[in-house]
Image (cartoon, rainbow, N blue to C red):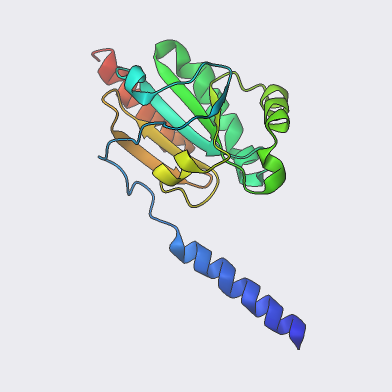
Length: 176
């Protein structure tokens, strides 16, 4: 009987978390929060969105041992490969799901092992995560050249739509 009660509790907690998630694109049209705080950066000196005005920015919240993040990562890396030369800047925000994902040496190792060559900021205190009101992994935000969010997505999928949004913004920048 206790097992059924425990399973019921787990089910209720998990379905409650699903209901708590915000809708995709609920932040479209809002100014992207600045990347503030004293964080460790990998592959770059510290960045600020203000200094990236005029660029299209994809912000990818992930954790190195997250199965959904592992599914989405190749798509993010493909966008880097295709569009960095056109002005796309990808910033990975590594936000741990569990304590051992806070180990900076393990994060650096994962970045190297996965072949991530774009900037990654370590958000072990969840400050950037909180500023973006994230509630699950992965989380993606596409920010236009003026610093306004044009797409927000929680979870996996929507890869074609993310790419089309980036293409549209890059074309606008290049006067097409």
